[in-house]
Length: 463
Ligand code: UD1
Ligand code: CA
Picture 1 (cartoon, rainbow, N blue to C red):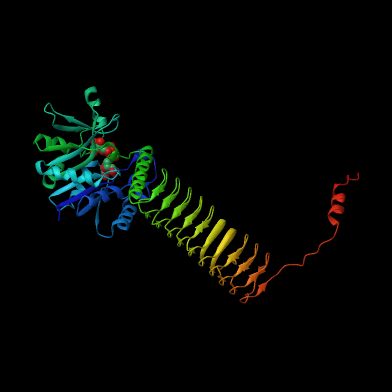
Picture 2: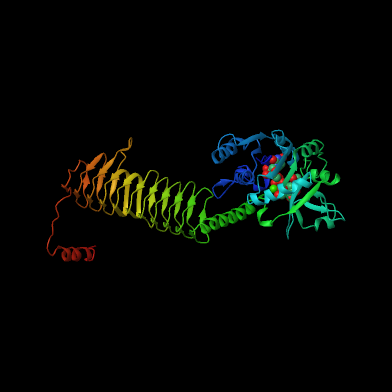
């Protein structure tokens, strides 16, 4: 096993986000920012990750990390108050027992495990290795200063830059380091906060490592090292993450159009097609050969093999089985189960309802708390009246039954197999199998009445 731990610094206030939510809890592709560096550290071989949090974000971050990685895999250290990245690292290091450690920031979500492995590999010849990158606009970042021999001599924070020469340096510190634990502990113990921000800078340990000839640097790709300090950078980071996720599933054999929003937690099987502006959120799984058309929003749901979800459908906590068809403009609320080849058409809402194999509700209906048998047909405008103002009740429809348009089924109620409910009927009593339920007033036709009526209605008003 590799002798490596990681410390993720995530206790800063994130003032530049201008948000009531702590920075590292802001979400990108369905995960909080802090998830990503923790993931990268584990993927790079860290056996333990310590996450430094603040009293303000601790509870929520701990819950998210436990949810993602399981209990006890990430240990939590609390920094209170936040006195700088060096202070945070020191607190995190108290829980590190391995002889080598990765230091990461909670706000760099694009970091790759491959880069961390690279960094770690360079530790053999150094006490501390930092990641640098070249930026056209280095504003805000710490600059990497190098001596005449080209070796790193220090990192100078933007606010502490001393000359135009330093300001012109385009090589920046990415805030990602690998270090020998003993060296780091000693260097952190002697940090001072005599700088522009009155903080303990982690970056000062670079100067200390350089002083003893044990600092090394690895140039990393700028797009993997983007730090999120404000909302604009958050949007940019999320767009890049969405692109990466799309690419991953596309390489696995799915067709993913540009501009699909697939969360980090979703799964897309080969031959599935995910169109632009479709959103797959949470634990959604799209099975082989299924289509999710543009604008569909699917959360924590399974879309079966070969199923078709047409544009602008919203599906939450539901299951859609093989070759079923949903939408356009359908709304499957939690607990909907749509079995093989069933159809749910436009402006149909379902909730806690099972639609049996081949059943159809093609237009304008509300199906709440129901069981619909195989091949049953639900006409346009049908409503399951499931709520009496106090409790919810079940509507059960047998296989092959036909519910005429504009019917209200007042639950609890059972419609037997193969029964027929005439259009416009309000069903308040059970309908036996194979029976016809009809409840509407008889129609009367008055011959010639229409033209008489028109004449009367269009006559000039008497004054
Ligand atoms: C830091 C580096 C800078 C580098 C940049 C890269 C320092 C002093 N500066 O600056 O050289 O170019 O990252 O993105 O290290 N944090 C704590 N406790 C604190 C302060 C911060 O846990 O007391 C955490 C934050 O939550 C954040 C990370 O440390 O995840 C970095 O802090 P931030 O304030 O964003 O540092 P930068 O100004 O970006
Ligand atoms: Ca930052």
